[in-house]
Length: 237
Image (cartoon, rainbow, N blue to C red; front, side, top):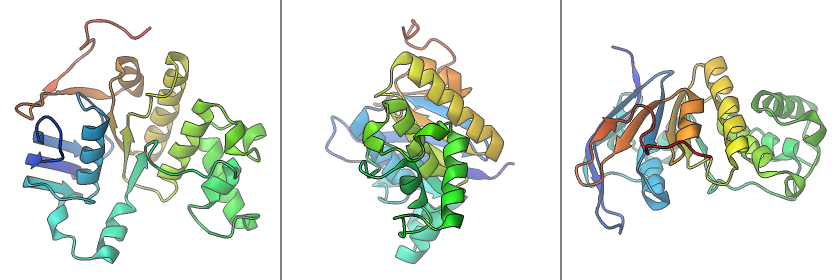
């Protein structure tokens, strides 16, 4: 059996929602792309926190890389583990007054005014990989469009060579056209790096463009059923 990067088994987590977040069974293997539909923003945040070990389930087991998150012993142990997970979320802080290169270089150094030559080269390589136009590399984030800013978030997420990237409603602020372009960027990065991707999304077109297996979450039971294509019965316009 291929090693898993993330596994949920009989998980329940109370978080103040209408009902607890329940996930009966989920296993994502190395290099696999999976889109999960059915989480609103608060539930998606709880999922990410469970997946990263930032919080523990009230019942059941969450395992990262075949190791239960409950076995993480201290902050050093947790930080070593979390480095293997990238997160693309609007909750992740970007410094809008800084440039694209500076924001990406922060993954490697706090000396960013300007970044040392080696770190600048690494940041430029990330910007190129995620599809940020070279003309924008030295532009402040305040001057970028939403798609470019989301690509910077993707660059930050993959900077430390993770094994899996979690996308937390990443297409929500994007237009349909920008969503398709961002999905293409994620897919290219995932294929090039052989990354697993878990996308929490309500966007059918985005999930399809990722080339992901689609699962639909049933809140009452926690079951994740095969969503196939067209789970809303329509296409996003």
